[in-house]
Image (cartoon, rainbow, N blue to C red; front, side):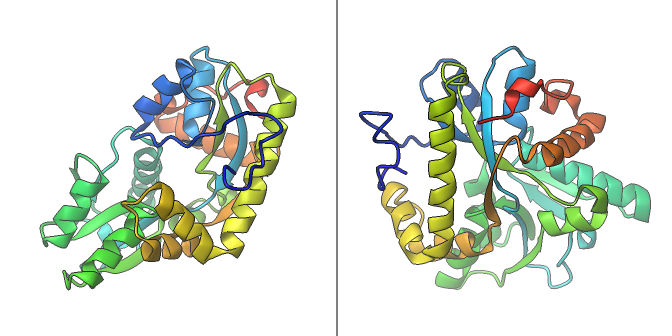
Length: 282
């Protein structure tokens, strides 16, 4: 969006800022230090229910979490029964989704519980996998592709990509098969700026289409802005990620299905209830 100048009619300058975790993102949005951001889909609901009138513009990511393993017997999430899983997520949406999935599998199929081993972050989990100190890990793209690429480059342990959480979710919850995982949020200062929000949503949708249609160029662009991500694993991540931009209004049925399921076990993840109509934009 910056490179194409898609928002030049609305802003003198558009800059890119990388955040590290959801807590930092929430603070940046609340303090209006960033105006628009990628966000996990539960965070806008949480902020809205806590009285911060943010706006969710779209959902663009519908599949981004992958199981990676060195165990030849592990390919699906059900194969993890009784085994250890490295978890770089704790209170984040991936942890809530995984716990919901595994608990349902255990209840319905009588599977042994998975043993969680929490890590500080994804880089810590990657290091444990590359040194053979971990066998299974759940990672978000592009870190899953980065782990597999590093293992191959440095002749590390034999690792393979297992099941995506999206696929396992679709099998376990066929009536709520689509998994809206991430989108774009506007802070409360811009939540009522309909013209700008629509422009941002359109520009993002066009950028997402361009990225899927020009994988090499998109990967090089990512590397230019985030040099620690090599081009090759970013390419693989783009190819594997289900990137399909829909307005939040259009994706509302899928969002509310997810919010309702999450609220049964982890109501604190969305602020205790379904968010108000005003959340859904642009």
